Amino acid sequence: MGHVETAELLEQHGIKPTANRILVAQTLATAGSPMSLTELEYRILSIDKSGIFRALTLFREHHLVHVIEDGTGSARYELCHSHDHEADDDLHPHFYCERCRRTYCLTGLSLPAIEVPEGFTITSANYLLKGICPQCTKKATFD
View 1 (cartoon, rainbow, N blue to C red):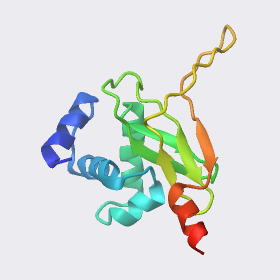
View 2 (spheres, rainbow, N blue to C red; view 1 turned 90 degrees about the vertical axis):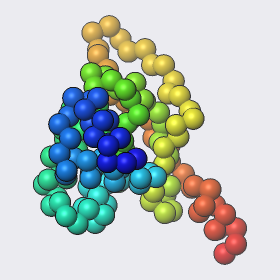
View 3 (tube, rainbow, N blue to C red; view 1 turned 45 degrees about the vertical axis):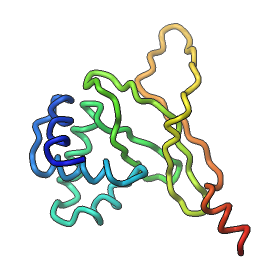
View 4 (cartoon, one colour; view 1 turned 60 degrees about the vertical axis):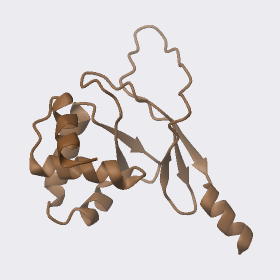
């Protein structure tokens, strides 16, 4: 995703496209898997941790990122493919590999519909599967 495309994506979500925000969004777009704040900090040396966190917080408020809790105590962020800055229409499950500790998006799968009792309002969902990824499974068969 280029600079202009990233700026347009930010504007579609009601976010002013500053240089730092564009850099954080581009890093997430090219990551290939959800990233933790620490991983982003190592990749983006020109912005301090608080600047990255502020961008992520703003992105979350405008439904530009998903926050994935993978059970490790560290939140992971991924760019949302939603086209609505009011709601998140890009919900999908994730897979956490217990060997390599990577989190994968399973975008080809849809989340099951869940009916909640009257009076409850769902504001987000986190559907996480845990196990061993194909790369680690393949590596284990050769060891």
